[in-house]
Length: 356
Image (tube, rainbow, N blue to C red; front, side, top):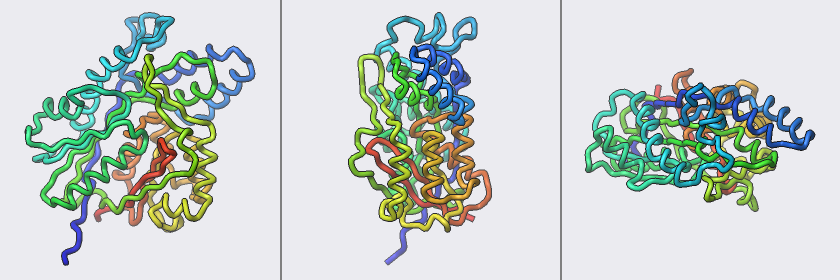
């Protein structure tokens, strides 16, 4: 019986828009907190967020202002409806996705195209729009993974791995593209404002084949924290998608990882002390701190994740690919783990190692 063919994540390309909206959002959000105690807490949490920049596809105003300033997308007292937001998604998501794909360089003859996105809907889907614009053959097999949230990159890369293992001649293009800043909500409560504080726009593309180079993609794994389904969710409303990210999430993750059974499931059965490469979804500073503390990782273990968080914030499904891109350009990794948390509350990931 022949052994399964090794599958390689050969390259990753990334792209972000050019409009940094992080500090403009902080000023806008703080104005909504009338209670001085909440305002002080928000200031403290914003300062501790470890986020320096978040990028938006929404353009600056004519005078250079942000989307919440006069003439900006969110300037009116009643924020735009879901239809207006989806109209922008239909135009901007393919453009940003193509920028990430172009960063990959030569693709060769792509046979499969896997796209993950949870921040918009359009039909024909962005998989068809992008495939047509970049000149992929109409015979390319496409898959669109929607609404899985932050761990969707795992699902997309896992799917690519399954395809190549079943057809070693396959060349799979994977794309994660998220436009989180399309979903600003006019709220005055600190928890949803702190949730929105995390998110920015970004896209990442990857090439997965049986040709040696990059990272060897190992076995995937998945598990779910019990009684946690309400902690992370998206609600589709008439005013965009409302993100609910409970403040309990970091503590629940830490408690889960303190359980040897859950920790084994969330690391693919590996001993954290033996892992020399960590690609943890940069969902927020407190989440990275929870993982680091619960698994007793050295301070340098999550440098790549913290760097992505500082430079881009949380870009939902694209974030993990940004972290992998940093690791791919760094020192060789003998035994790595990619791990992401998302709605459920689920933890999904896979093992990886450098090809050389």
